[in-house]
Length: 564
Ligand SMILES: Cc1ncc(C[n+]2csc(CCOP(=O)(O)OP(=O)(O)O)c2C)c(N)n1
Ligand SMILES: [Mg+2]
Image (cartoon, rainbow, N blue to C red; front, side, top):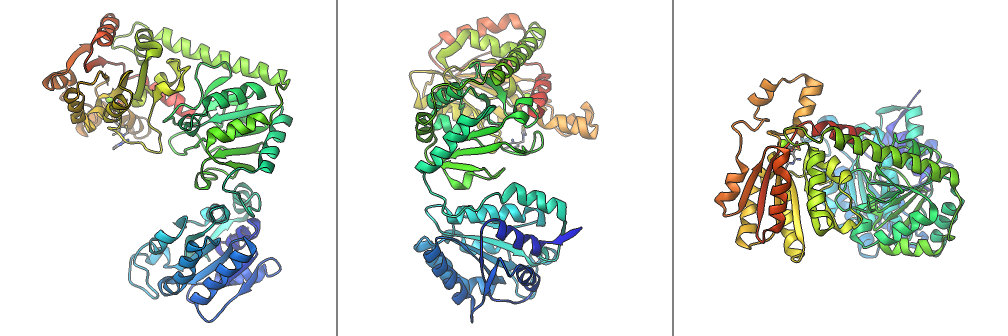
C-alpha cells in the first residue's frame, strides 16, 4: 500500500508531538490540508486573514506553550507576508516550524504560477536556526524530526522547511514510511534543554549502569574539548567496547587501549549486539562506506555540543548537550565504580585480539615489498619518531594504516581530515599551520602524491619560515582513491586511467620540487633506504621532504577498512 507525501507529513507531525497547524490555503496546498483533516483528532487547524496573521499567531502559540507549531504558507508571496512572524520569532526566541509550499520539482527554476526562482529557504536564512527544501517524500520524517528538535531546543527559534507542491501527492510505500517514522520520530522533543540537565544525566547514567553490552563511539569533539581522559575513564568504568567514529579529524580515544576495536562499523558483531550505544561527540558520516547504522533495540545516548549535530544520521533516545568533555566528566561521576560484565569483557578481548592480529598480519606480509608498503612505512615512522612527533595524516588510501598501525596513546598527536571535509590538498598547508601552533614539536605530514599537488606551493611557507616540518609524500604514481571505483565498477583499464590523467604520467619528481624551494629532500625507493632517510630527517633542524615510492596496494586495506 502507498501513502502520500502529505499524509506522511501529518503522521510525522503527530509523531514529533506537534498538535497545532496554522495555514492560509492556496495553489497546491489542498492535499496537505486533506491529510490534516484526516487527522483532525490529533492536529488542530487554524487559519486567519493572511500569512502575517497566522505566523504571528504561531509565534504567540510558541511563546505561551514552549512548543513549536507547524505553519504552512503560500509560495513566495505568503512567505513574504509570513516573514514578520519569522523575524519576530527569531528576535524573541519563539519555537516555530515555519514551512512554505513552494514550486513543484518538475517546474523548478521556471517562471510559473506563484513562482519562486530558487530555494525559498534562502529568503529567511538570517532569521532561522535551520532551513531545508525537502527534495523527496522519503526525507519528510527526518526533516520534520530535525526541524522540531532544533526549533524546540534552547535557544529556541524558528526553522524553515519548504515542500515542493508535487511532494504532497507523491507517494511512498507505507512500510517504508512506517520504518522512517520509527527511525526519526521516536520521541516528543518537548522542551529540549540546550545544556544537559540533572534528569538527563540521571537517565543516561541509569541506562549505562543497567547495560550488559555497552558500546562507545568516540568522536573528534571529545578530543577537541579535552575530554579524552574522561572518556577513557568512562569506558573503563563501564567496560564498554570502543570504536572511533568512521572518519577521523581528531582522535577521540587512544588507539592502543585494550578496549579499542577500530573504526565504528554497523556490521561489526559487537556493534550489532550492543544494548547501549554512547555516541560521544561522534559523527556517523554516511556515504562511501557500509549502509547506515540501524540501532535496532539498542538505546542510543548522544553527547553533542549542538542540537544541529544530533540526529543527522539517527534519532537518539537520550541527548546530553554541552561541551563534550564537561558532559563526560559529569556523567562519569554518576556511574558506579565498576560493573561486572564478564561475558562482554571476554567478547571485547576476543575482538581486540582479532583486530590486532589482522593488523600484525598486514604488516608482516608486506614487510619487504618493493615499492615500500604503507604498513611498513607506518611502522618505520613509528619506530623513528614514536611518541615525539605530531602526525598529520592526509595519506588518503594510506589512512587505514596510519590510523590503526601507528599507536597514539596521546590522541593530541594525531590530526586527520574527516570525510565530511573531504578536501584534497588539506594536508601540507594544514600541517604547516599545526607546526606554527606547536613550535617545540616535530610535525610529520603524510600526503598522497596527487593530494600534495593540489596545494604543493604551500610548501614554500615551510622554507620561508624555516619550520622543522617533515613532509612525507606517498608516491604511488596516481590518484588511486578515485581510480579504484572506475576500475572495479566500470572496468576501466590502465590505459583508460592514463588517458584520463589519473595516473601521474609524466611522473612528478616531488623531491626536486622541494629542492627547488631550498628544502632538503630525498627519494626512497626501497625498504633499505627508508630507515636512514627517516632518521636523517629526524636529526635535521629545518624542513625536510622524503618521497617514498609506495605500494599502490594500500588501496586494498583502505577498501577493506572502508567497508568493514
Ligand atoms: C578538492 C578535492 N578534489 C577532488 C577530490 C576527490 N579525490 C579524492 S582522493 C583523490 C586523489 C588522491 O590522490 P593521492 O593523494 O595520490 O592519494 P591516493 O589515492 O593515491 O592514495 C581525489 C582527486 C577531493 N577529495 N578533494
Ligand atoms: Mg597517489
